Image (tube, rainbow, N blue to C red; front, side, top):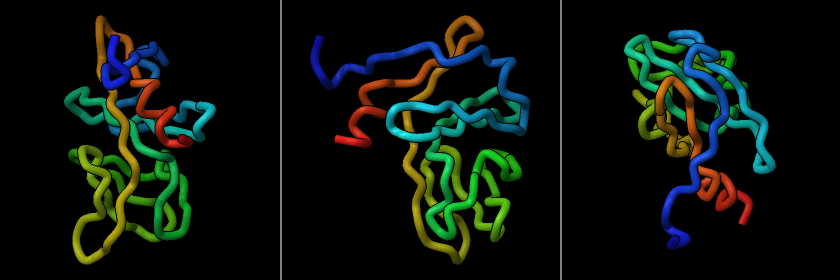
Length: 114
């Protein structure tokens, strides 16, 4: 297997993440927030706003965005980019749902600390 291929690992059940909510997964690379949209899309981002370090997992999920609980900056769950007049980006990670289970790509997480 190539080192470019994802190395998926099962992290939780889809139902463990509330719709329009989040769950934090602690990894060796830091905390990753898993977000679930109303249409069951799952997105993985660093659990830290680049503005003031706010815990994005405690933010408000709407559409495919999350609003930071500290200063209301809005980030795309798909790209991690700040929306509107704000600038900044949050690291995103590949996530997928298979048979009701959420999987993260360990290779991308490991690359975070490399």
